[in-house]
Image (cartoon, rainbow, N blue to C red):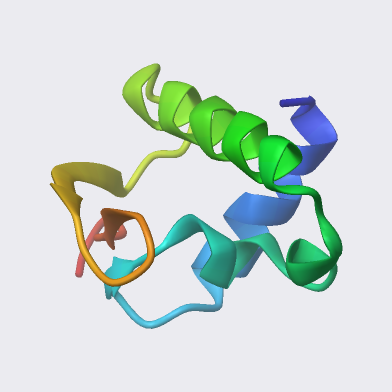
Length: 78
């Protein structure tokens, strides 16, 4: 995942209400048009970025529910 992608995701998250989410919810337009293999690759890259601490405030819940892995957006101060 490029820095530009991470910056876009960070700004999307900053405008979002704290709480649980799936990656596709913050990816933005074009998600539905991606091939399944590309969705899997992007989802894995996002998980790696979260685990590496590149998206502060995003927590991997370790669970899957209703469409994939569930994350928690908990920005600082919330």
